[in-house]
Length: 380
Image (cartoon, rainbow, N blue to C red; front, side, top):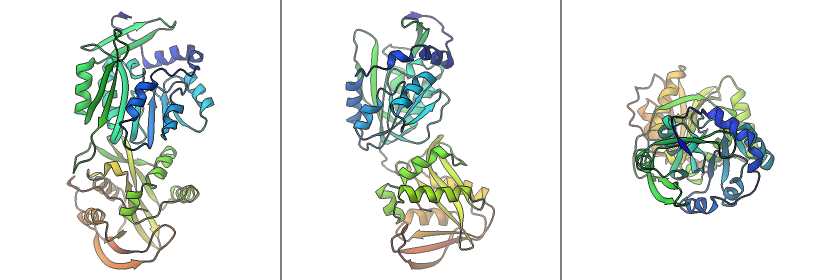
């Protein structure tokens, strides 16, 4: 490679890969052993993201470990091959510098891909990937094994290509600052300067803070993640709910999202999709409900999301029904001005087991959010 001051854009990288996409149709096992090592650190094999998925070479490997894998790539030609191979996969055409991760992942793989990111964006992209991990999630990526930042370009494969690296010391600092611990670092092609790093996001170990929380409209692409979240056993125990079947889930949300009386918002923390919150009519009353992904419990996210919803939804009174054993939900609702008006034994339904339930009512605007609330899970 020749050093210099390249000005190759992600769009130019995409165009270069479009020209050589057919070369990547082989089923090479290059990098598999390194990714297998990363998978060994993953405690919950739920969802994975392949950044720079190309023709989908790694998807079979990851699905074999039980992951449901999303893929993102900047090259339309490479993605077209991946779609032919894995028509059921969620594949996104996007530049990782600007693309927003739709939710938190248990594993993120960026094998020989993010080194094409412009040097000026390398730190931001690495931080984004760390923040896109669920608690205990694992990131494995390859980079240049230099001591400091560097960028280069070549045409060894024909079209012009660009590579950049933060260098090993700075990459490790970025990982640590983003809440990740380096589990493995190896010059796996020595004496070539090819390095791969395995980093793991720290598990939740008590109340923590998170980045900015905001609400947006629910997108169709959110629904698969919402379905997965409502299957979590611990969340269902906390909320005292039964998970919906796929058919019931689709029918419920098709109705809810088309009803103008419902206000349904996705909850984003650090621009990562972490749950939803909504206001919906039942029996002539307006109810509120929310569901936060388990890795994000205890960080004040639901409290801030509820504050934002109460600013958006001006009508009163609002009602919330919560199992009396769900102390976190009760505390957050009461913090925002909801008052318990009655407690009763709620009969079992297809959605809810029989339980003692508190009915809380908000009859006036809630108090300002002090960002100290606890995350809650309450099912709609």
